Length: 344
Ligand code: C2O
Image 1 (cartoon, protein in one colour):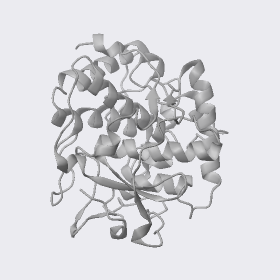
Image 2 (cartoon, helix red, strand yellow):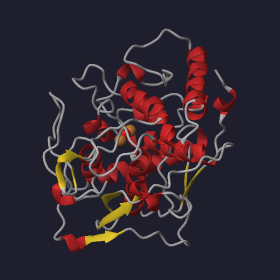
Image 3 (cartoon, protein in one colour):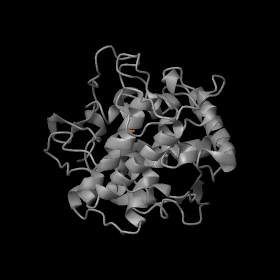
């Protein structure tokens, strides 16, 4: 799948969607303005993404809050603005883009093997824009570690109405100290916190280990040029990734905005720490005890997406570019993997 910027058009929004109703990025002056991705200088500081909970987390979340405030202060026409950064998600998941040369076929990066690499690239550029605006080259987006007990609540800053990380279109019932339900399906269960935590650990084991022994099961199904969208999602994409989206969204909104539906999900600043954690679990799955392999299929490796970088330059990035986080100059702080011993 190759994304062609000029094919971006009307998104296919659900009924009663909340504005804005368009989500294509600013058009570059010419096709020549699109640069191919190059790796950052190996001498760049390594950005270590910290868990959003705990003491290290407080500092990391405070810096993230400043970055979001700076992005929100940029004009909407600036590709680095929070408005445009949120729209990237909408453009890649509402059929705004058409497949190159196949205008009748939409591009949808969810429910397929593009899920992990697309979101990695999205976060990579988002993080670098944030670092640039902060003037802090080591800045890293914190991760919402909903897979470990101490991270199984919305980090408190996100629920503070005075914070740039607050989103009024989020489920008020699920503000902290409510424990997240990694298996949520629109109905709150009557478990104690301790029971919910144990069930969450088992969900993690099931999705990371039991049900994900093969790349196609973990990543999702192949999605190639000429294929219809959404061939099938990987384990973690379905749950906890999707379940948390719906858990965080406001069930009283028509489409469970913001987090609970694709077009608006990234309007909530909690989207990005949610995705750093999903990205972290990709690394855990690949590097874990089983040493899982990636696909070697060129249709996966050569799939490409477009992003504006921290200099507001348009960059084409391929899946192949996104497979080594060391070369991308970021890392994850270690947190335990308590779910590894929670075999159901
Ligand atoms: Cu693009 Cu969390 O979804």
